[in-house]
Picture 1 (cartoon, rainbow, N blue to C red):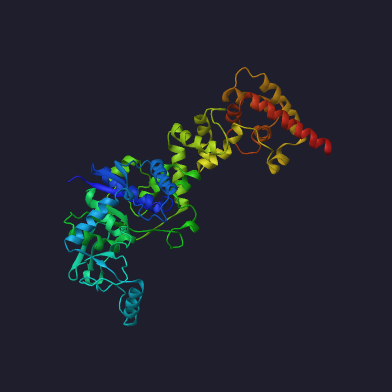
Picture 2: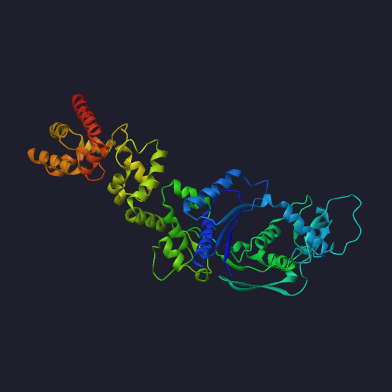
Length: 471
């Protein structure tokens, strides 16, 4: 048997991290077993599904590197198939038309509640022969078995038993002919030969209904695995109030896709004490049966730690590729300045996110509007004028512009003025970076470049002179 998994999001919003984790688990299971990963877009909710949401889902999958082998398949393009299967079930007596009005259904549920019974459709139209005089359009209901039970041998939850007597006759087609979610899922899983359904455990109660429909269609049953939900740090279901929950929002905030994947695979699954997994290691070691049954809490600090680890340890060219996008968001063309790989090498030890790295690296590519007020008042003082003027002259005459040459010039100037290195490096750093924090001063000067460095030194010297004149 060839393993076939599917990720089937509804395009009614962004790709939530819970959905991304489900997609990852489906993808890993297919890759581990040499199977096929199918992407299906369940877009039959026409009122809420949008093209923007579809694009966001596809963009998120691409950014995470979860490439699909088949699809995307769209349910809205399969309506004729659904209608044909509905007619098949009607013809075989496995479904029936229900003419109950909303008022009739409301009265039925009110009576059941008054008797302290579980509200459910009582099947009154199963054998109905007469049609209502008002010509109302019927819905189509599936004839759920009245006796027996449905046993789900879930790979995560274990054996779960559902009593058919607790399941009412599900609507599989609305009065306008539109098929419903639980029905379309069954037809799709059957037609796409899905062998393993991995999804959130909020779908567990749908599973017995879908199994009964699949059995009525004489279709093979997939193996089910229901993944626990992700909670926020307060124990509530993860939502926007907890911070970023959209996959692409994590990209916008400067996270690497492999850091998010690594974090998500560990969210409810573990392999000993190992924390960091390459994608190849995930494929080799992941087993859906080892996913924990209890919900996992999302820890932003742990994700941030992983992201910083990947920024420090990944190939600088890979980091530069992702950093380039963040530089573009700041209106910076990274080709109009130092090599971005060199910037990564200079900054990767002091940045937790790529957004932070981009902000801290902007001064390499464009002039800043002003100095950090606190740093300027501390370091751009009158006593810095002499050393800065001497540096300006020495740097202007430097035969080569390298970090080694810069280191020698700064050290020599400090010795000439009888200063410790910090006493000259900090004013110089504020002059060229706008603040007292940057990579080592020799590396900073090399990356800023000769023209920008001299221009900024002139501006800093002028700033000190003007401040001194006012004083």
